[in-house]
Image 1: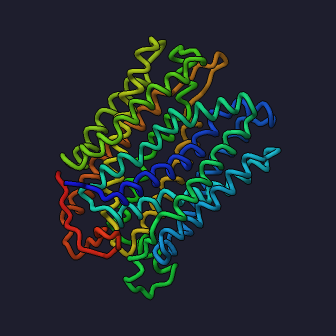
Image 2 (image 1 turned 30 degrees about the vertical axis):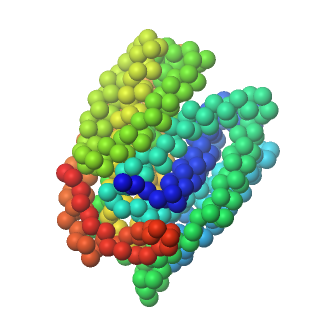
Image 3 (image 1 turned 135 degrees about the vertical axis):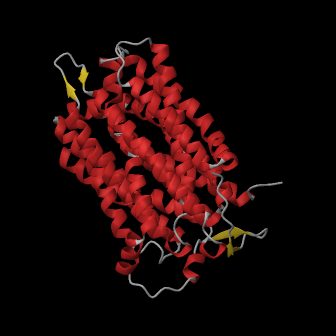
Length: 428
């Protein structure tokens, strides 16, 4: 029995490439840090502002877009924000000084920060909850793909041509993706048939005031804390504390990314089969254990560091894929766009704040060694344990929703789109 139609498979691929371009644009700046600071004569605080500027700009745009997110065809909304993202990335590729680059990053974040939320709303509209784990498994491969293909290729061209090259490369790929969406994606506007006389401000306020939504937003805040606290200092910790040569870092990221690419679809399918909350819990326990051990390490054999990073990434993916699939079932059909926009905004803002806090906690000695990295590990571990408790409540509420509260979009054999009832069944 076929799980997906040919058109649905195409949409999954389209959204995966879309995520790849957005994720790569966000991630590629950090590896370029050393080159940027040298060429543009940046201080560490200026470079940090360029990184966090994207996150805060994305967080702001998510809130501003929430009130309008369900009042337009999702395809048109996606094309609008993707256009701004492409323009912002191109401006990064031609920036000549720090203030030009900072402005370009703010523009890119303002438009790019909303794209993931629109993608999740599209996934919620086109795919039933029982298969969303599979869909998320493929779409979230973008993170691993950017680590395996994007960052190494970007750094290669940066070293050979200049630091502008990665941004211009992303711009080129994004233009091809834009054409694919424009030509082949069908309108996604069934939610517009649910008439609402609420103003954009009322729509935003309603999404912000629902207890179930607020619980999900708090959960999302804690969900991203670990990544934004631990990852920015990951390479420095590997080199200065674990004793890994700088030249061996690309292979470390490559191996970790390859295993993550293979694991994504498997973890997505597993979350559909045994339950999204169950996979999230197992992934959290694994991730917490590795982080507590990893952040307390000293000089460590290279092969063991690769093993730890690979297992850690599997745990992170298990948490991300399963929770993303489950969270999509929370909002009502007519409020998915607003909910996803606010959720994305919360993640971006909390991530920026978490990075700042982590920078205040970690101290680098004159020898380069990082101090108090283990403190970050303890903070992240506590936040992860709390997410298990919070998602259990969310999972229970989702499983108790009636058929009348869950509306989805199904694809007929002729690829026409109609709103239908979707039964919700979550395995606890």
